Amino acid sequence: MASDTLNLRKQIIFAALETGGYGVDAVPTSAGSILCGDIKVDPLEGESTQRNNIRSYMGSQGSTRVSNYSKIAFAVEWAGAGTAGTAPKMANLLKMCNMTEQLLAAAVTGTAQAGGSTTTIKLAAAASAVDGYYVGMPLRITAGAGNNYIGRITAYNGTTKIATVTGTFSSAPDVTSSYSIDANAIYLPNSNSALAANTSGTLYFYLDGVRHILLGARGTFKVSLKANGISMISFEFQGLLGTIADIALPTADFTGWQTPVAVGTTITSDVNLFTLRNPVFAEISIDHGNEVKYKNPVNEQAIHILDRNTTMNIVTRAQKIATMDWYTQIRNNNTGIFALRHGTVAGNTVGLFAPAVDPKTITFAEDDKIANHNIAFDVTPTGAGNNEIMYIFE
Image (cartoon, rainbow, N blue to C red):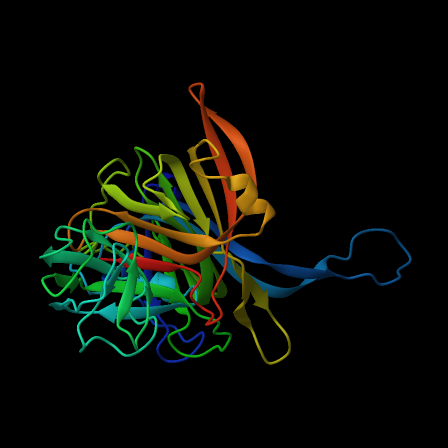
């Protein structure tokens, strides 16, 4: 009997994108091993229809099973890709949540033109002519006026080559200023509803010799950064019910997963919220907010992402009105930027950028008799759409 006991410490998840079409088993291997914790599995979800015929006696007639699917949730440490400009190991998971990958494989370097200010830089004439092209990307001044600046581009005009940045330069960049837009990988939301290849994944969940397969998996996620903790991304997926069978526990391969750095002063920097620069905060949490639903009409069985409503919550030090009047911001439905950089080493630095966060509610919280504000935000796109938040690996 003891040989049939399943040990919860022996769990592995493999993932792979379904390149052959929606719901076609991608047969993930150890190369798709997911380094994760806090695994929760609902191995058999679905509905049954109760039978209700009239008979000459009382009693249940049982029910008929009409749908079957599975759910799985797990938490991944949010760290870098190992090499800036390459996809992180969690890239396929993000793509399964309707995220579009944008890679800048090598740094874009140049010398600024005249015309910058303490919050803007005029990039070289050869810079992209596409509006918004560099938004969210990390910028460094490596020599000349404004030297040693490290921040993020929050707006870019492809005609004028003017890039607006977080924070301020020590002096306005000019023709003496050399800059680098460092290599990075950015993940942006999309509004894809098609059940096409590369929009879903196959998940193999192993529990000590029993394998559960989820096909056509799609999902959502939450991001959490807590002071003195590890930054985390918690994924939740639904998938079509695949085979459940006794399969020997394979060997996982976690090569490429990076060791995260703790959230804290100097490591978590370039935090910008409206006009606040590096405010004291205890926690930032983001719910990406995909609406994920299993659908089972005749001739279709699929996991759909129906909508998205991204929200954010920040616990930060309460401040005087002269520093930041959150009450007026909320009453007037004002929006502002949010940006964050976590990490200091290329290849193991991550970040967030949202161009228009909208504060909705504010309450007080206590931190050892120090007053904090707990502020809830809607995270909204600009008119271009599908740009309300960027998840950045540098």
